[in-house]
Structure formats: C-alpha cells, structure tokens
Length: 416
Image (cartoon, rainbow, N blue to C red; front, side, top):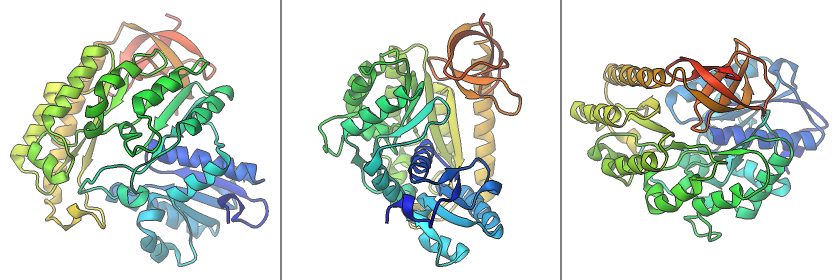
C-alpha cells in the first residue's frame, strides 16, 4: 500500500524530524505525499490525530532523545508512525518500546513513494533535495549504513526536475543532500558525477543559491579539480562540509575512513587557495575506543593548524551492529574530558576568527525567520549565518554590516 494511503480516511498529521538535512528532506517529501492524498498537515502535535516521527540514531544520545519523545507521544493516545533511520536499523527496539503493531517507514520506502510523484514541500524559501541514498563507506562506527544501505545515485533528470520545480515555487536556497554528496555517480549508474551535476543545476534559470551537503574526503579526492570548477559559480555557496573525524592516521585506519590526515590537509589547502572567502566545516569524533591520549592531541593540533570555520564535535558512542561496538570503550569520564578540551579550544579559535569580521559588509540572502528574538536569518556567500534584528521578507537579498560576532553566528545591520 502506498504510504500516503496507509490511514483510513483524511487525518490531521503532524511531522517531527530528528537528525540531518537528509532526514529533513525526507520529512518534506512525506508532507507533500500526505497532503496530496487529502490529509491535513498541522503545526503542533496537540492538533494532530497522527504523529510521524522521522528518526535519527547516529549516536546513543540521539537514540535516547528519540525514544523519550516516542514514549511521550504514545502516552497521549495518538497514532504514532516511526520513520527514518531507526525504523530501518533498529526495528526490534522500536517494537519493544511501542509494541509489535507500530508502523515503521524506512528511508528506502520514503524514497520509493517519492519517486512515484516527485513532489515535496518547501521550508519557507528553502528546498532540501537528496541526490542519493546510501554510501560507499565501510566506517567501523557508523549505524547509518544499516539504515540507508549501499550507494544509489538518483537520476540527474529527477534531481534537475526537483530543483526546477522548487525554484518555480519560490525556493531561494537549495540544499543538496546525501550521506556523501561527493560519492554521487560513483556507482556509475548514470555517467554523471557531482561536479557535472552541479554544473547542470547552476545552468538552470532563476535566482537561487545551492548549498552542497557533506562530502567524504575519500570521495572528494578523485574529483577535486572539477569540483572546484563547479563551485566557482555564483549560484553555489562556498561552503564545504568535509568530515575528517580524527587527526591521527592510526585512528582513521581503525575507523576505516580510507584517507590520511595529509589528504584532508591537502583538500582544505586547495579549497582555500581557490576560494579565499569560504567556510570549511568538519567533524571530529573524540574518544574513539582505540584513541590514545597522544592521538587525541594530534586531533587538537590539526584543529589548531587548520582552524576550520565550523566544527561538529561528537563523543564516541558505540552503535549496535557496528564493528566498533565490539571494541573496549574508553571510560566515560575520559571521553568527556577530551570533549571539553576540544570544544573549549574550538570556541576560542572560532571567537578570534569571527571577531575579525566585525565592521565588514557582506551580501546576505534572507532564508529563515529568526528564533526567539525575532528578526530574520540570512546567509552570506560563504554560508555564514547572519542574524538581522529587523523583519524582512524571506527570499530578500540585501547587504549587511556585521555589528557583532558570536562563536557560531554573526549579527548584522541591513542596508549598510
């Protein structure tokens, strides 16, 4: 039965998302599927008859947060559907918590239904468009492979059609996403790799910007030169999310990441040589089971040497069914200590770098409503987050003078 027809009669449906941009993209697909089938999408769970929770299980902490939310929803008596990575990788756990009758929807099932209609919702003026399911990686610690499987690159024509449709409906920011964007086309399914795909997308008419999602160093290396050329378009944010995970080659081998620290350093050097104003975003896992104190310090030194603009720091947590889960885990207090040291050093470096931007003027594309304080949020060409205290229409382009620098975002005055 198609997903959109799995409920008897029209229902009021609320969707919530945990996890990455790919999960947000899946939620926007589900919203469109159910709306087109005659259901009503509501903003709050309290107004819904059915709640769909699109789940993530990348860390133990995320898993616990999802389970807590599911128990809370179940206690309300509403119908609950569990979608996403937990539905695929941990179905038995979900059945133990919610009962054998729980409805589970995997990422592959969401994608199969979407291929039938290729319709999706926007989030304001933002569109999230996946270009592949799964990846080529064999990372020893990663449960996502169990959920999303081997790499399956989507047809370029489908992606181009999705972007064209989004732009026609008012999208100004297109978020291209996958488990590993730079692996696109490596399965040789369609004869097109990521640089060629970007060139086709930037050739489309319309006033929009593209943000490319996470790219693995191992799959960036073979396409680096054409990738730099593709990013040269003014329609592409100069934002590069390339997770290194460790500053130690020994730890990278234990993680089965299939590149060396020197490879990552060379990638960053090439990106900054080509684009003097760009954002390098990376990820570090601290406290991997085989990580020694000296190897942890290697990660700290790599952070200090390259000073990435954005860093996601994760304490290692064993995930069921992975190779790393069989290793002897480090003491929790040692992982917490390393995480505190690493986080403090990153914020120290980040504050120094962002403070240097105070007083500068940058072009900004307004993409989101502000959070608690009101105003709006925009992005500059390097995809830095700029908070503007004034109310401006989403999709507006303006210039802003940076008046204050925070560690993770900038505050600006529009029209300067």
